[in-house]
Image (cartoon, rainbow, N blue to C red; front, side, top):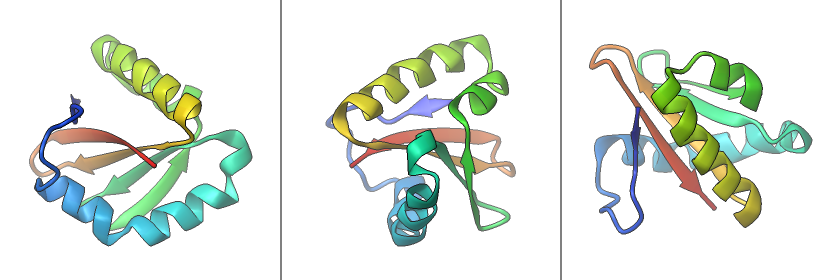
Length: 99
């Protein structure tokens, strides 16, 4: 899992996909907002999923779990959304914490 660092340029491919689909991501997030889901955009499927924090956490490696815990805490404290982008072809999982 790769986490975008503060100050890192937002011109990467995956951020562009999130930006293009932001309205849909927020709309789905709003439906489950009381559960504070972790959002996932699947590149190949071109689908957005809302996952429970615990359920999504269970699918990650130990290292990625630590990163998600930090990012999720930041999101909850700041009224933000954690959004993952999964690219199975390139075997990448990238996360963002966005307002």
